[in-house]
Length: 159
Ligand code: FES
Ligand code: FES
Image (cartoon, rainbow, N blue to C red):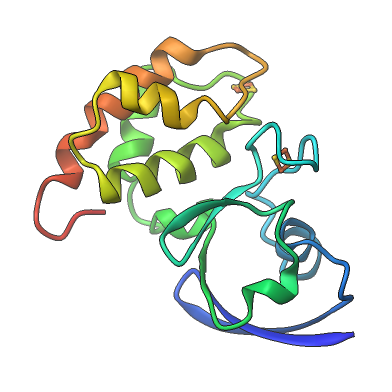
């Protein structure tokens, strides 16, 4: 086992993991944050996406030990318990999820994008989300929701 220390959703965490354990399993099975979903486990579906030091990262392709010293944000860390985030509000308004399996990865990917590029247009959003597969194929409302959420990311104190 190897001890790993990192920041998770704003809190310091310390875990003992096998060297081969990937970050998605560490988040789900060790830290019990099951909002990060696991689909393909080889970097194709995007449902395991989390944000590491500001970048959207497939947590099935990162070893937990590689998170040492990093700041990791999962879908649970995007919102407070009090209110939906602008992205969540827009997803609800546009019916941008069906079964919801892909949704955590899409929310984290879109959040990382809009933090860097709050003016991203539909083509840019489509290009970035092309790596997130939705088995329910609800892609059009997903793009509409992300487009609508952009306004919140242009304000000071963005989400
Ligand atoms: S589970 Fe990580 S990309 Fe599919
Ligand atoms: S909403 Fe079902 S996989 Fe995307």
